[in-house]
Image (cartoon, rainbow, N blue to C red; front, side, top):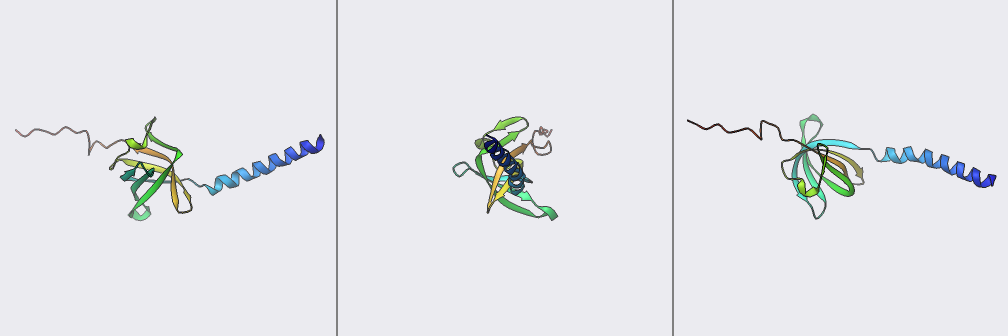
Length: 121
């Protein structure tokens, strides 16, 4: 009985030590930009993102079953995303694939949407 208990204790310590290493390997990155393309069939979203130094680059993100798309506190579907949406993507890199963990959709700014046009007299 004591041998069995010591095996469980050792296994618990090994699992606890391995957990931080696994989490460190999956570092979460964040990037913001505008959606340029949504492919529901491939479950991919392309974002024109601003990099450090003011450079822009199109980045394709793959979505998994665990990926979330949020607009405020409301969860959305991939079909709700459209070109032109301003988003922030939290993602991990798995080989050459950028896997989206969460895509946050930001509201349109008042300067480009929602203003009433004034009639010319």
